[in-house]
Length: 354
Image 1 (cartoon, helix red, strand yellow):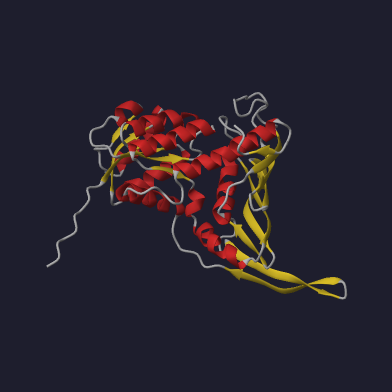
Image 2 (image 1 turned 135 degrees about the horizontal axis):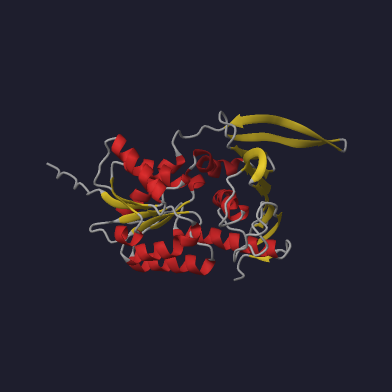
């Protein structure tokens, strides 16, 4: 008779930050069958009070500690992991402290705001033999996962382009580049299997010219146009704006045989192959074989898959192949180079430059 499999104990977890995104993380981890949520940390007294009221009204487990003291939460006995959903400027201190205490970490994007600190956290996670996973949610989206396979159907790749615009929310800690660009860059990188070597960025500020940060000494930019050049020669252009009522979430890769289109605002067919090519006849180029082919996607919620993936990495003791700290550092490297180009009025900048 075969021996029964050992049942692993649940992962004891603390959540840091229950703002707009942290609230969604709380929902998923509260419902995860392999998670024991031990603590929720939030700096805002109003949010903590609201959360306590919600837990009381839902008759939820009152063993969850609600506190504004992140150090006390991190020191709880038996804690295995934590989720960091706080402003990016706080990431380094919190992630470093968590890793030093032997905790696995899931952190909201971006990992940090500079390359050196991101690299240090990756090295620390390696030394501690703990998992460091970054919440690049789009890498778990069904359209993005399917798109990576569909790239092979496009023929030789020519170029890519993306647009990400909306009316708010307007942030005061980072500009629209750091708020928005990481999504499209992560998708291009994932689909292509490579990271940009040179970038260019130009933009304008209207709303917060008076807000200067180390990354944005000339005010927080509200709109920008970014160009990415990859080792293969592929180039992509990204248009970003958080002050445009025309909400768009569209990314395309153009090939010789077809264009792969991920349009998040197209609820019924978010990922399609737009096929078509030219035939040259008597010196004229005539479009032929034009066809729109919707691609079938897995039906799941991306953020829910992020949470499941993190717990699998913790229990399996394996680095994330999709969204590790190393991948997060590559994206921070690109963002830093884009910020440098923006500050230098759109000069091409090597991503390898520090």
